[in-house]
Amino acid sequence: EIPFPNTLIPLSSGAAVTWAHHAIPAGKEQQAVHASVATVSLAPVSTGFQGMEYHQAPLTIPDGIYGSTFSSATGFHGFHVIIGTISSIICGIRQYLGHLTKEHHVGFEAAAWYRHFVDVVRSFPFVPIYW
Image (tube, rainbow, N blue to C red):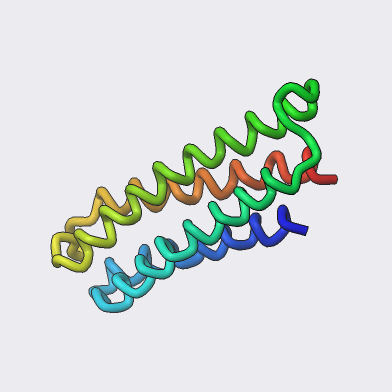
């Protein structure tokens, strides 16, 4: 029950990043700030769902290859979510302070691409692990 919403939440966060990514070059600073807040707000929700999933999962690392694979894949992904969240927080603060303009927002571009990469990688283990 948890894996599907925990896949939709990061994808929703990715949609918010895309919203900000389009707002910045268009000069819509307020929209970009709102989109950044939405992006960062979804991260703890996803992390909470992941914690619930670990708690409810009937397997652990010592349970063999399936438990090790599950723990490694989801843990490695979680690490990258944390990195993406930190970079999104930094970009959101910089956006709020007016450091990112439609001409100068390379750091945000890199953070947005990283977030999308993490979202795509999340979709790869979904089928083999959860189905």
